[in-house]
Picture 1: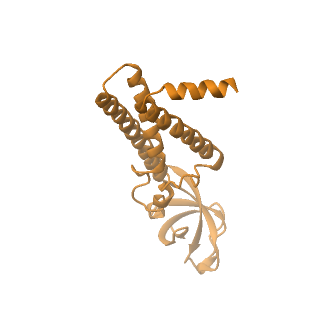
Picture 2 (picture 1 turned 135 degrees about the vertical axis):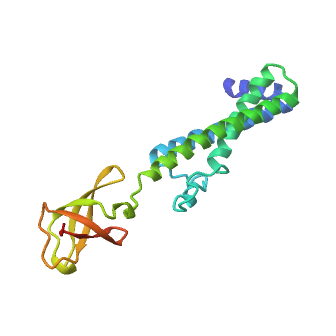
Length: 197
């Protein structure tokens, strides 16, 4: 009871500007903590705050946007705490708002840069099957003749060894362990190969 009274008394002693910055700092800090916990538990599932990042992942263009709920929460978290620090330093209100805003923008810019770079690194690991065309591979599972069924090949594409399904137009089956050449792309996950060297 005493603790509740002391918090209430402390709150009453604050001026209007201090109350505003404390409210912003505490509210958005709480949201930031919840958002962080959700990211760790739910694998970056931000449904609790309706983040729009998920809507651009399949875009093929921008993987990380500047104006998101995450960045909004981060901005106001920093804005609130820097504002309180500036008020403690007895800066004029105009400077408090200026430094708080600049600090929030700076943090969001840093996050935007880092997450954009991470998104580019992530997308660079996505297989572009066209890069397999005209490359050498090795049969991993027998490939039936005349497109009679799927086999599998091991092929090095984009710096890593991949296992992909394959068809052949050869008149005879391509046995396991035979070197083959990719002569075509059937679809996003199937290669057309030949064992004729």
